[in-house]
Length: 229
Image (cartoon, rainbow, N blue to C red; front, side, top):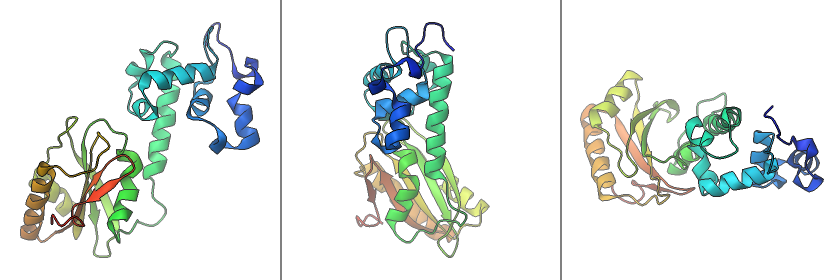
């Protein structure tokens, strides 16, 4: 434990998020209170809750915290390597839970099904990630792969990479998905052009491109529903 830190038991009752969680449930806690539980301790000048509140303020939002590396976290005053690792572990567990499937392979019947599958994983990312879901003849997801990680506003992917991966897992059809770090899922002209190239390549390869989704902040756009494919 870090020297001169206050543990949660030494904090006044109104600042004790563990106790509030036990009494009222996790859903009753604020972002700062939940973050304070992961931090476990504050500093000489700040309780864990005050430290958590300052971290969120410096990050701009909870979303800003999600993609920070251990190195970036330790640059924040009051966060040492131990706290940074605890935060990264908590965030990664949340991500894995968000993308974990049940015992059966998920079935994609409509664009919303595909969006729900990847929304929580992609919506907070600071760069564009281009992901493909590979489906069998029953529209069950048999594999998924991130084929490209782009810059802040551009995701570069070539059709041959997409269909090489599809052929490798014997996919009958695919759904392409990428995120917009801005949070706005409106497709760009480049998104539309790429979608049409992929659709044409799929027709030649005999693998149907069912849709291309753009993920924003808890919103998505289906290029098929928009009439672009």
